[in-house]
Image (cartoon, rainbow, N blue to C red; front, side, top):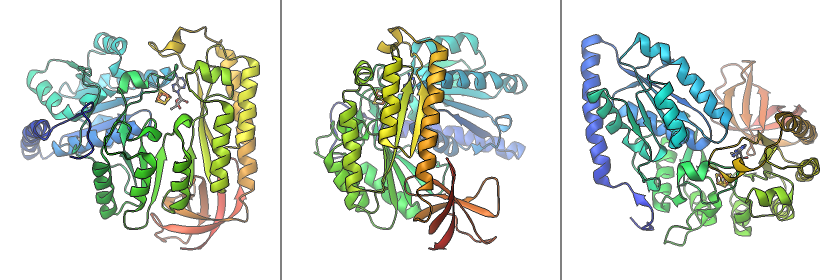
Length: 481
Ligand code: 5AD
Ligand code: SF4
């Protein structure tokens, strides 16, 4: 394959065929069970965390399906339960462990049930030990770089019935192409373009649990998207912890804007989103490619994290607030209607009241369409966890004030949409009201509109004129396709 580098370990065809061998053996075992009992064995996957984890779970589902498992509606119906965990915040870890605890009684009822935990949380030694000791009904544990080896792990467990604990075994830098995928959504598809992170922001656990940055080759990415287009997908999200550094580890010289342009040049009408961008690497070239390509969604997710230069430096973010705001100004000059979203952490160690006020001021100035807010959560092994922590009440209070500020801005911005027309990709009937349909603008704003019953608009793009607005929702009427 072209463009590969020596640093990244690409899982070879031989290694994948070993996995296919295990897959066939488990599929045969499941087929016998189906014939004898008339019932198929089933899998259930519980996913926590980011879109990368969603994408990983789709590969777990793909492998489970090839091994002859059907998808279970509920965990109680499953013979194989996989919990794909997130380690970014303590809360996500606690939720994963609490769900695991709820599966204990299922294992008591059905001793043949296999419970596996994978994802970012288990790549931490301390978590591994805790699960080993306190969750004896968990059968297998495997880190993110072991994901493609699920058939082997399952086969080994089923044949030995001994608990297995596989972490990354020094293999955190691999890329496995050709793993089967079973996508959860029929309209929009996640496409990982790279894995890992090199940035080591001082609060973040990701570089420790997902390894160093490594890019898939452009050939592999474009082939995947071509296949998805042929299957009927019309919405893609290119995924990476920092997509702006895509290609730096490849030899072909392709960077992220080149890749985005190459994706947009593929045949047919579709929309392509991407996330996440790091402000230190967002370039003018990227903006030009976005502006020039109608297929590039006019949506930019650019995490600010803090509005204080001192806090940003302590976070090891390597940009200043004014550099960041300059990027937004340039983006909006080139694409006036662009939707901008961000991530913000409140209560980083040592954040003063004045520094938090600078974050509020930056939010006022940036006028985001949406923000994702996080209370700082100390992660063992990261530098910020060693710093002096703020009291919980201070963090909670700042969070509430940040949300209040952003809600006001969103309502003002949504009200300014009234009277304008947007092209909406229809997602289906509105949740609460079946006489209404709901869809999203290119920038991800949720729009509800009445439609005749039986109208099969789902998956189509329609023009909707906005007639009413609230903080999180817009309402409108269809003008036509
Ligand atoms: N505490 C709180 N938020 C965090 N994030 C990452 N690590 C932490 C942490 N330790 C947030 C960042 C990142 C988003 C995905 O999660 O804002 O952009
Ligand atoms: Fe974590 Fe920073 Fe990497 Fe994002 S860029 S995954 S916040 S270390």
